[in-house]
Length: 80
Image 1 (spheres, rainbow, N blue to C red):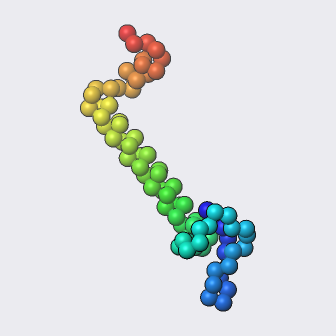
Image 2: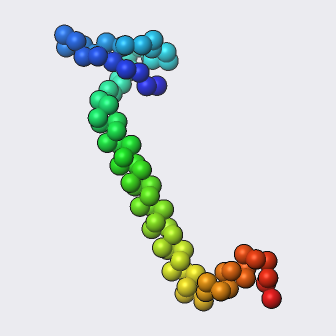
Image 3: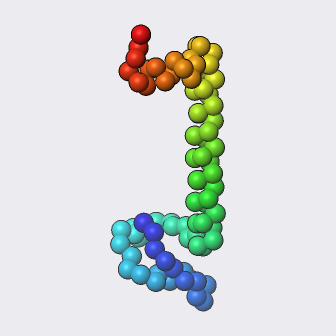
């Protein structure tokens, strides 16, 4: 669940209809700036994880003797 809230007089007030909230449950509110920061950190982490995986796969392929030429043959369907 994600809703916009405003902080007034020491209380967070919803700025839109709240659906699915449970009485007594504790929720955490993030500012738009914090959410942008989280999203950027997630994107950066995903890119970094992808690049690390790519490097790991490339190193493994090189260790097994896979060359650019052999990869081109495999991708062209020429497994001779």
